[in-house]
Length: 388
Image 1: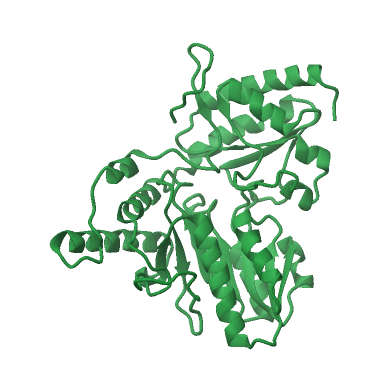
Image 2: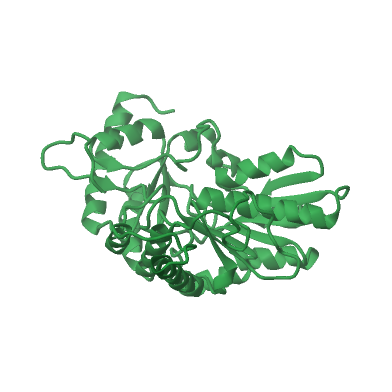
């Protein structure tokens, strides 16, 4: 990833913010350099583009264990989450009747592109929204629970939630409930068995291209064909994509996303090595904590708190050394709103947290170099400022 940031001579950028976005892979770059016609046009170039989209759709459907006609394409994860949640909620409310309460249950580590549409629904009459850790859902599931929103992998801590187990728990009480899954941090980042198991529990699955070395501005939504499940569209136009998502398809984006997804398969072992190197900071720096709540955590995300050091300050200092990390989800505009606090960690621990996130484009050499710089920065900051 290129940068115009001024660094010490000989220094190179170490990019550990892949949960926010990933660099483009070579196959995606090559596709984006090509020209494509409108796939709805009847001429030869249009038909060629249409065929290319169909092939890419079939490839993605294979990865998602679904049928090609169960996929639609969007402008990215945020649109996928909004369309999946609002489209399902409106459809379910209409089917259930205006006067019946509709209860929505969501994981407490949801991304803003999930919490914001849910917040809008909660402001409307007839909708009720509850956030809770899945381990506590039994106390909240009721006969009015119609929509369940699961975060497959937390963008803050990397916690992996067992979609199939949660789905089975919900459907024991509410067999007709719709299971929506935000898969932005899980798509192509779990092993094949894990991913397939999770997808069997999902009725709607949202995913994004730029988290897997594909281009920004494209994503998708898998919608299982089942009786009574048809999303209410959020836009109206030419009727493309089963009249659920109109507009000319982003041909180059779709093709590049499919190529990136295939290219990203089975590379987790590289990331595991990189994370383990950085994880050892917890043993080598006093008062360092790793932030997660489950035994199953993504190898792509590492949240760490260094007592006595503000995460914001550390992030800025590391940036001057050419190391790109974050304090959490890039889309979280209200910095006072902390998922770490909401799931039970202290404010002190939340304020001293940084998030490192990896990809197979990172190297072990980068991890060792970053580890040394982080240790140096922590020592410097702890000398400058008393502990929080």
